[in-house]
Structures are given as structure tokens and as C-alpha cells.
Image 1 (cartoon, rainbow, N blue to C red):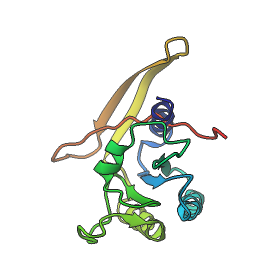
Image 2 (cartoon, helix red, strand yellow; image 1 turned 90 degrees about the vertical axis):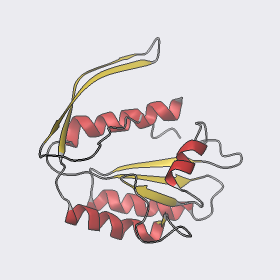
Image 3 (cartoon, rainbow, N blue to C red; image 1 turned 135 degrees about the horizontal axis):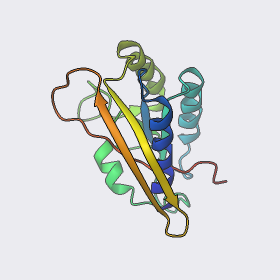
Length: 170
């Protein structure tokens, strides 16, 4: 529950502060305290934030006895196609063209993919505004009203995901 709250608060920050005009990517990556290579993923994510400070970076802990794997992450891991750590999806997309054998992005691919997406599609196609929000600490309930407006004609189905995130827990 705590991770869910953490992820939703990060997305609320995103929606309140940066969803009008410029596009901002969401990088979701798998990690774990048990993972030898995962610190490299964090280093790459931190360097992306230096270049693109409005990027939202979310690390999902998993595996064995990881003390931070406190959410039902197997569903997210399956949905994202994570088969190793640290790997990522950017804007809920696996690496295009890697095929079924290697569909995810290793940390060495994150910077180039992020730059490509920001450079080829720098503007968002929707405007999302939180018109009201309230958190009740006694009940641990968060309520919000959200309005979204298409900035251009859109085809297909668009979805808004809300994630509550937590940071700096150590």
C-alpha cells in the first residue's frame, strides 16, 4: 500500500506541475537490493533527470527477500515484460524492434531512447489538470478531481494512469 501511495503522489506532482505543453516521459524500471547491476540503472536514471528534469522515474523492487518489495509487483512485472533487472519501459513501451527474445530495455539503452522520444515528440497531445485534491491522513484516503482536454484531434483509446509513489524512505 505504501508503494502505491508513493507512485500516486509522484504522478499527482507530474500532473500538477508539467502536463501543459511540453511532453514528459515516465521511466519505470525493475530493481532490487539483491541486484548486482541495479546501481547502474539508478546512475543512468539520475543522469537522465539531470538532462530532462521533468521525467518521472519509478523503480519497482522485486525478488526474493528484498525489503522494499512491499507491493504486488508481479502483475506489473508481467505487464511490462521484465525478465531481468535493471530493465525499463519508457512511457509503458518496451524497446521497439528487439523482438520477443529481448523485448525490454537494459540500462545501457535508457538514455538514447529517452533522448529520441523527447526530440521526436517534444509536445504532449493532452492537457491534464487536477482541479481538486484532498488526503485524509486518518483514513489514508486520497480523493482528486481531474480534467483532461485533447490539444489536437485524437484517434484511438487514451488512458490516464494514477500512481502513488514514495521516495527517500531510507
